[in-house]
Picture (tube, rainbow, N blue to C red):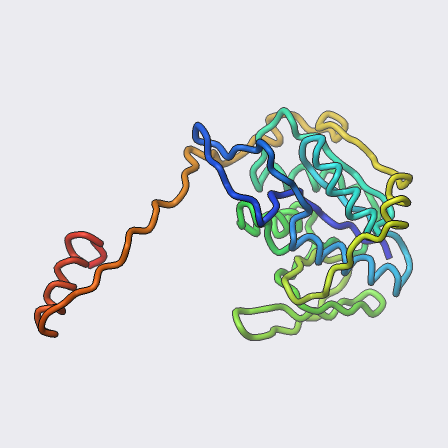
Amino acid sequence: MNIIVCVKQTFDTEEKIVVQNGTISEDGVEFIVNPYDEYAVEEAIKLRDEHGGEVTVVSIGPDRSESALRTALAMGADKAVIVNSEDIECDEYSTAKILAAVIKDREFDLIIGGNMAVDNGSGQVGPRLAEELNIPQVITITKLDIDGGKATVERDVEGDVEVIEVSLPVLVTAQQGLNEPRYPSLPGIMKAKKKPMERLEIDDLGLSEQDVKAKTTVTEIFLPPKKEAGRILSGEINDQVKELVQLLRTEAKVI
């Protein structure tokens, strides 16, 4: 079974976000594997160990993204592909286009990605990629069983569970609860240094800048306003209700 895992490098979720000149400052920030993608890597390794085959991890990003792939290789993935996006602005559309160009001529039975990236939380790349490759997709999965050319999937549907049977190849996205990702061991870290890492440029994929031009533009990034201290109303209940309604109308402007 050949499995492809889409991985993104994101801010450490414990980092303090600093906005400077309308952009998020990366000075001194630690970058990690997107937590949802760790579930995807772990599931791919478990399936590979059960059914045989190999796991290929793929990422798009600047040179620093290589460290995320090395982490996935240290966990147990077999090989990696990184596409340099240093000189282009990527949104979900362009990311899916690039990933599809990387994957389309490779043999695969299963593609796994994270349910979403913790930096923007769109959850669009997986479904877009499936559409580009014209294969089925099942998102937010919490259980995955493979039997021959069929997958049985359980997916989270806002507090309930939906069971789906689908033919391979298929793309799925991993939700929290799918598994418990392993920590890279020291031997795994040492082996990861010798595992193959394929480095590609956009030109290598037969894509032009127009092909991957972003469809969306970020116009502004800002932090939410600081919360003000609460206010305690006093007096008779009827007077408090009147004052509360007045405040909701004039200050909070929610009614």
